[in-house]
Amino acid sequence: MPTVTVIQPTISEEQNTKIRCAAYCRVSSDSEDQLNSFMAQMRYYSQVFDNSETEELIDIYADEGITGTREDKRDEFQRLMKDCRKGKIDRIYTKSISRFARNTRDCLKNVRELKSLGITIYFEKENIDTANMTDEMMITIMGGLAQEESTSISQNLRWGIKKRMENGTIKMCTPVFGYELVDGNLILKSDEAEIVRQIFDWYLNGYGLAAIAQMLNALKIERFGRTSHWTASTVGVMLRNEKYIGDQLFQKKYTTDTLPFRQVVNKGERDQYYYSDRHKPIISRDDFDKVQNILAEHKKSFKGLKQDHIFAKKIYCGECGSTFKFKCRKNKNYWVCRLHDAESDKCSNKQILEANAISAFIMLCNKLWYNYKQILLPCQAALQDLKLKKFSGKTQVMDIHKEIAKLREQAHVLARLKTKGFLDEAKYLEQTTELTAKINKLQTELKKLTRSDDEDEMLEQIEMLIDFFEKRENIMIDFDESAFENIVEKIVVIDQHELEFHLIGGLKFKEKI
Image (cartoon, rainbow, N blue to C red; front, side, top):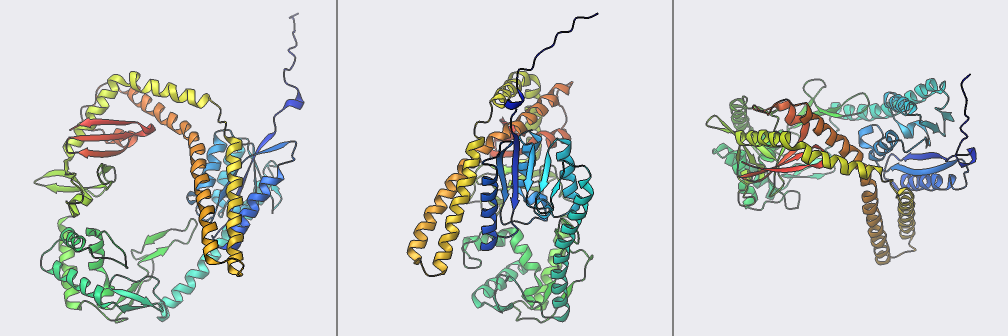
């Protein structure tokens, strides 16, 4: 018979830690009533756990004044899911399914992921607890109703807009340069109209889009009453705009029918409505047609250029911060700063040869391949040590959330007092300015505290880099597009002779060209 030794428990049941809870709340607009609702939810969840013996509130995640139809627009919801994946939360409380998600797919996807992580959700309005597996059918039904409600409202609004487009009663929402908006109608502005005529005249006389933008910037031409930076693309849009001949084309873009709603360019999927002679023209139809023909010819000549180049939107100017754009001259590919190309006096950073950028990347990869153990492994070790240190600011984060909610409530009270005449303008401005300053300071502090959670993501990316170089058997000879796309976040052009590569994991390396 074997000898059996009983190992007594070292932690009693009374010492078990409380269930770590989080609250998620959201309001769908930034009106005063909704702001009041937002603060009420913050107060409610802050107080409900104060005297609980079994549960403790870890954090409140609150998205304020934004759309609920798209999950990627809810920053606080994304932070909640991120913290759940890190094992910081055991249970989530939320007012209703429609607050948590506005379409069935996202609702079920998130509920299932959270259940797989051992995290339960309680929907107060529907009295649904995901701890009970049979509730998934109820969640599907309620999530479908929430989605149907959101879709129905959107469809009703779009139906009304379509009818107004069909019967000619649709009104403009924003004016174009050269006009002002009066009761939804475009009324000509003589000073701006003269500039529009000059732009068309320049183009008909052989000036390019970039050259016209440069001249407008040199003349310090304002748009909509404020200083504006003119670009070649801005000029191009103006030259194609049918409003300058007195016509209007409606539904150039349309909103998709299903959640998440997105605006997409109408390429024939929806009806379009063209109104002729709707307002006073600035440009003659003859000149407008000539401009369209020239633009069409230029488009044909540039059709061969690569629009989806791997460097597109990856190269930035170290002087002005603008993105670099592609140019081809004498069968050689170049990248040039957009601001320098439009106004060379405002940015001195000149173009770089694409071949030089590729050579610099290959050289950097080979240096890291030889030395990654001396460079990347110490970074990995330092981040792992940082991760082991427990985040001590949990209660501090909660306190800041509560304080922000309290200050917002005070601002709301001041607004009501001013509206009712109990507070004069000067005193109102003085007190609201002070409250805003306090809120901004607290939000800055909150960002500093929550930013410490990013070390997990940084560590994962450092490990990806190490894995990339460990698996390489030889040095890189030819440009590897896949490697570039996977490990480079962006390139900053210091000058014509030096590039700074920003790799995943927050690492930066400079390389001569």
